[in-house]
Length: 526
Image 1 (cartoon, rainbow, N blue to C red):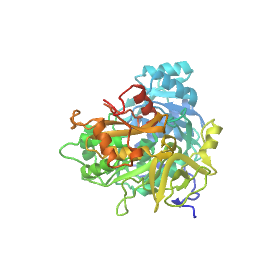
Image 2 (tube, one colour; image 1 turned 120 degrees about the vertical axis):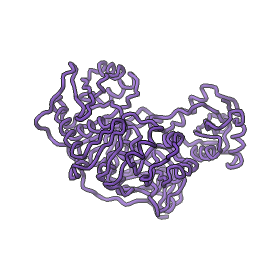
Image 3 (tube, rainbow, N blue to C red; image 1 turned 90 degrees about the vertical axis):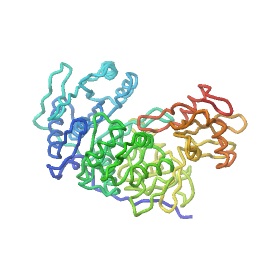
Image 4 (tube, rainbow, N blue to C red; image 1 turned 180 degrees about the vertical axis):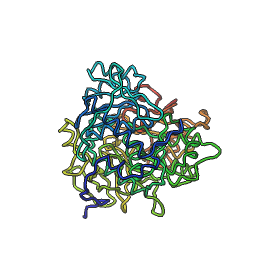
């Protein structure tokens, strides 16, 4: 049999992130802040980045250092992240919602030179920095200038006269895996990795100077940073970066500022669509993108109807500098249930030994290309386990059919019932097809006879009368659409399914929480 891979890859000259701002028309808009009507041109953005880089250099940041950052979404975090990479240092953006123990873990793992926090000096971040012995810099927003950086004594820091510029091989961003099945691992992404991904995304969606991205995803995550922001700017377009995003504000702001595309996880798309106003989507919108979690066919259809444009599902992960595959723009086919074709990298399907499998045969999704990291930080065992030669193992089970990739779920989350491998995603799609189900997650339930049984948790739509739909109804719905061994033995109806900040669900953990809480017997419960 002939091995099958999808996509074309080759050696590309590395680029530094400064290329995003270089050779742009300095008069064109780069960042649009709808909260206060502020617009930064490319020229202003470039000047502010240089000024902030000088301030960071004056604060002691040097090439190769790490700088932890916990700032809210908006123009300031974009400027600060660009400035860090301009020095050849690595930015480590952290979720502003973290607790003190969470900050403590990440700061000790990252070992940053300094920690940039808001001028409000959030207690959890400050306490963790103090416990870790890390110097804090505060960033205070200003209307018509870059944010002011201040040291421990609240004295403003002026820029150094000169500093070395960041290079393609410098680590630009340090992020952590979500830690679904293990301790979070540190992922170093070089400037050339990010630029390869940025160029690929811009080319795949045919982004240009007239495009306007509406950034609704958090900028401490690779999705919002690389796709919604860096890729848009690299194409010469602009980015709407609200300081305070809410789904209800999206529609008016998108119309006012002429958004041509947006990218979000399915959960956030659903929240945006639930708050659609009478005027609806802007006439300028040309496509929507979904990534970070599986998109159900029902939500895809709803999104296309209410956004009025093609919805393109994509597949990305931190270790690949975000995007690996995506459904294409029309007139090419976009296929419900598929994450599309390879973009800028090569995708293969491998068996447990690393042997590539033929088209149509399921196995582990493996990738290689210029956006893929070289290895985890200070974790040679995890790095060795993560690669088959030069192929990175995604940990996802999938199959290639005629160049399109179909995912079946995380390999470690597959449910093994009596020797049968069951894809949680398949059962979730069936549950989501029920008109009363808003969200669904499947997981394995330990069982002495079969090893595991299928369990599920769901939430119901706002319109559903909770007395009209119970677990038994949903089990019967699955029974008419799935082989008997795949039908959930338990379904728990919850008020909310816990997800990560980017909308990802951790199936095993949800199962553990639900089962530990005793949320129901053989038929489930509320």
